[in-house]
Length: 567
Image (cartoon, rainbow, N blue to C red; front, side, top):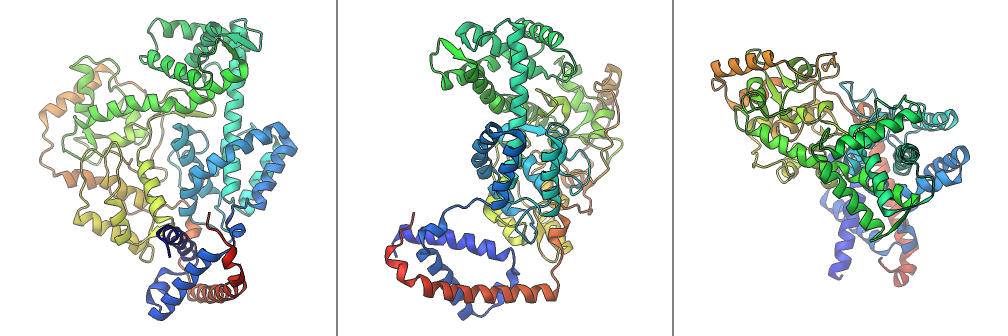
């Protein structure tokens, strides 16, 4: 067959094999006789090539359509259309993560996996740390994404979504609908905040000239950047006064050092959506502000990467992703870099950014430090814009390649060795000790490594210590109420200790592996239960039934071969 047909068939065959291996033991395929393998592959390839075009088209799930109908019934048709308009983009973003997560018998994800997938989606798309979706030191499987809604949707819709998730799980479309509904709620709040901005500036028309439109957008953006936690409980008049004050301070060069870059981002979004417009409709302005909110994290991530680079220069052992506290405070106190690194020891420790395995030489974990709330902006009741967890990018590459919830160590080693990320500035080698650690993780799970669990996340941290955060055990992060800023006295004390102690008496691996823990914590424990012999027998019967179905399908489809076209 032609090369294009072959490429298409090969791609589809790999996809179908991936689907089937979610239900049948991989070892079963590996150990089957060669003659059966040849028949199986040939039959599947034939089905891919000749199946009628109509059967390959996307079909949305009935449950997903039902979820959209419920949104319309409770919130109205306009909200449904707004949610539906976001779904396709979210499906594309969620697809690889969804494929790689453990599922129930109907091919749906349960609540913990749904939370994990939505958290990943919002981080990838917007850089948003959505409240109610983050772990916050809890067990990986004790969270539900319904917490993100809070009291912001009607009780009837909340209960419908909650009951469906708990009793049936969410398929890809249902998960996308929930993500789209959360996005819609966020942007509805933004519209409400912008109306307060218009009132503060006494702009009461739906069409605004360019000068006033940009003044209004910049006033809104200033408040967005600084966060609206403080003014959420204020009446509209007081909130309006605070908005105007914040904008004035921004224009004076106070509060936010990248205000000029933020305004440029606003101008670029406006020029893209309304090129050279002299008048702006309010709907256009809201679209511009939504685009800026979606892209703002790129601006902030430039500063985050700069911080990472500065911290890497302060490591006492190259490549550990760890900085002694004395080195951490040194730029602030000796080089007089205001606001460089000043978080207190107590704050760092209680929020998971401190390696305390050596009490005499406590170290800041770079990848965990960057994710602290102290490095977040644009905080609201819904989310914060924080430094990007660039390990998410590595996980996305893994999921795209593997498209399964588990993998055998040799397969993982091959894929991980080829991973790339902006923060992976050195070529990390996977040492023999790391290979053995991966084998040990597989030993906990009958020979395969779950991708979405604490042990594999810990292994990734040790392979990419500057990129992937260390995953603490559930309950280890206390989140106690410690002062954010360290006192000058405490900073000098740690600097003096670093000057008198030497850290070179420990090797790099001793420093890096000091926090290794054998405690597992899976996103979806039920999805990784070992199959019994009875379950394996059932899988074999399902496989044989699938082969019989292939034969029957081939017989039925033979007359249609002449008329089928491959899209």
